Image (cartoon, rainbow, N blue to C red; front, side):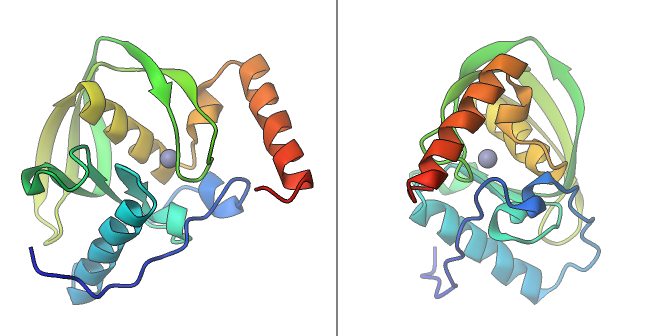
Length: 175
Ligand SMILES: [Zn+2]
């Protein structure tokens, strides 16, 4: 890995409207996109995350990066552009967090296994499968590209509790 000098982007927090919008398809696969993806990895690592979607840095585009190994294994660095889930199996219920919802954690039901169709950084079609944490991360990040946050997948009651907690933090200037 070469040392990147990319910029670290600030992470957008709920309730920024960019987080609730469907991202636009990426159509140009150029050096600028490569640089952006590198910056997304850097920004994700700086924020101690294992997944980041472009809307979380204020860009309404269908790009996401994932690294479930958190820098330990370069083979686990995943870039998904214009991704969609084409198959899913089983169920897992685990605690989830989100860089756009700091300090909020809750259990979310997800498929245990997914197959994703996407484009890579060069625009080539790829398909990849994931289970457990990777499956969870892919579903969480692809949700971001559809304007969905993990709190939108909680029960109405739990979601209301979370939002009340955030409003309190906002009021105290801690959000
Ligand atoms: Zn998230």
